[in-house]
Length: 212
Image 1 (cartoon, rainbow, N blue to C red):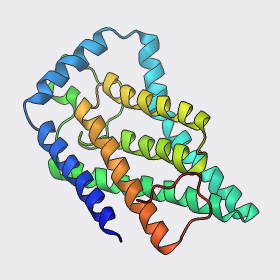
Image 2 (image 1 turned 135 degrees about the horizontal axis):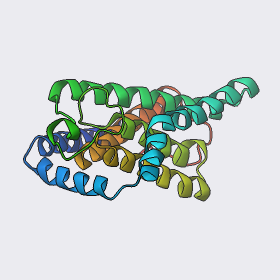
Image 3 (image 1 turned 180 degrees about the horizontal axis):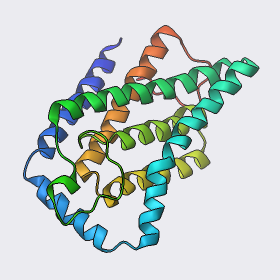
């Protein structure tokens, strides 16, 4: 791996560690105030909307690269197969990173420590970082950079990522720091997996290159 790979990977790890420190600090009390205020402004319709996004978003995140993978294998399009595998494996790797941090930091979710905040969605393990955000961010970045690489894909992927992030906050299961941590986790996972593929399975005319 080139020197830049280790510098960027190290920077992302340091940023993730800094967010972890911020998450366990008293700063979370200010975040909880904002979450409580956001929830007080929601209607049953908006809560249902965010629940649908949160609960069923994974079918989009995993389904689209899975379709690319199937098409690539069926039609023998190596670029489709390779890029779909990068996105899917980056999701898995980001999930492993997120779960490892969750079980190490063991930070409770907002609704568990603040009676003003209602739990509107299922929360699995601990709070930091957000696994939903990590998964969706890998998917969105993958759609923009690897699978589609078009202005329209960017116009659709960025709002999709932001809506998922907001859903986890409004539903009371994550703080803002969790969300940012999930995004950094996604960047780390995707960057590492992409560069491993670049080293051991070079690409075939990728729409955009992440390699530095």
